Amino acid sequence: MTPTTYIQQGDANQTENRLDYFQHHEGETRHWIEEDARYFLHQALSTPVMNVASRTEGAYVYDMQGNKYLDLHGNGVHNVGFSNPAAIAAVQRQLEEQLAFTPRRYTNIPAIQLAKKLARLAPEGLDRVLFCPGGSEAVEMAVILAKQVTGKWKTISFWDNYHGTTYQAATIGGTEHFMVGQGPMVPGAFHVEFPNYYRNPWGLEDKEAIDELYLRQIEVIVQRHPDIACIVGTAITSTPVVPTTNYWLRVQDICRKHDALLIFDEIVCGLGRSGRLFACEHYLTPDVVVLGKSLGGGLVPFAGIITHDKYNVLQHRSIGHFTHEKNPLCSAAALATLEYIEQHQLVENAAQLGDYLKERLLELKEAFPIIGHIEGRGLHLAVDLVKDRQTKERAFEAAEKAMYESMKRGLAFKLIDGNVIAIRPALIINKAEADFIADTLREVFQNL
Ligand SMILES: Cc1ncc(COP(=O)(O)O)c(C=O)c1O
Image 1: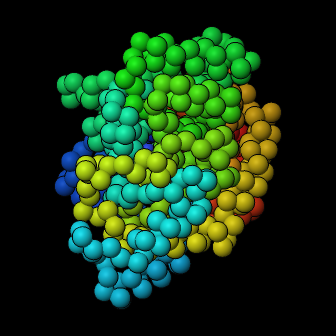
Image 2 (image 1 turned 180 degrees about the horizontal axis):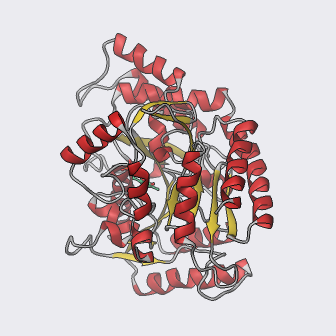
């Protein structure tokens, strides 16, 4: 298994370790995995699957063999926990009211209430929304909005910042894995490197100096292309890398100088994950914020954009003509999700427990040379495993082993770039569960 395969596959679904793990499944589990593999189109990162879930509840996934996993991935939908009772009750109420869908030309109260609530919660100035079924589509809407309001058509985004699988979202995401073999992608899409203070190519440590070099990549493009409509990035990447405030403020300056919109994709880092309700609150107010995943409360697909009133100028065009644009069922789930986050102070929990867990991970870094770096904010953390702290060579094999060993101990996580343990539990976890994460990793690293 070459390192490239590891990187492309995230947590690789065809490695020897995966096959070995599969051998441990018996009876029903094995049967359903085989059935799944028989009927679904196979694709990297999803089919064949690793296991069969029988229940998802709170911060946990349960499999058919009765194992329970504290889930640190949740595909990003689990900010309020899986099967959240308040979100379920809201959806049930909505079904009982027999208002699960409204055809176009009708509005409905849950959709309006959701729009109003987001406008109230979002940073000042962000008060116009548009909803759609999924995150990729929401990214499309944001970019189309930017193109329409600026009258320009080119974009700048970041290599390997995943934004979805639809054509424009995949183009902007700049990840080879989602583009290769499709012929030309959307034209006019320029990419630059996302700042990385730990793994920058110059071996620098001074963050401002690093920012300068990354910013120059953007400046070189905007100087030659006056027709840039927007710069699209994740406020904090999913890896995560946390850019400096200086970096985003400078990007915003560039956008303002060149009449381009700044779009923040907060599909993963938003809705409390970073210790602020909106990740942009750590930095600035962008022109458009994109939300998704946890917006549907982990029950239904839902996503959307929030932008400024001044961009409400497209009465003559449609930028997100989706069947489920104002879906009352999805709106009810989203509304209940936002209320739950507020009532249970999940943003504060993410901030406080995130700090605590980061401290515990830093202690592990002292003890285990395999940990090259700890990064993140709130309950959006990462452990970068290296073969050597000097060379920072990625420890692919060890990371994969750590993943399977953790699963045996009831802790499930996703690897990013093949060697980075992404730690993104439900925001409802408590201190004992944060300790469980750190203690389990300690035990696993001790036995690697
Ligand atoms: C940062 C980010 N943007 C966009 C998307 C696309 O969202 P969806 O899968 O709902 O289309 C994802 C999905 O993983 C994501 O992580």
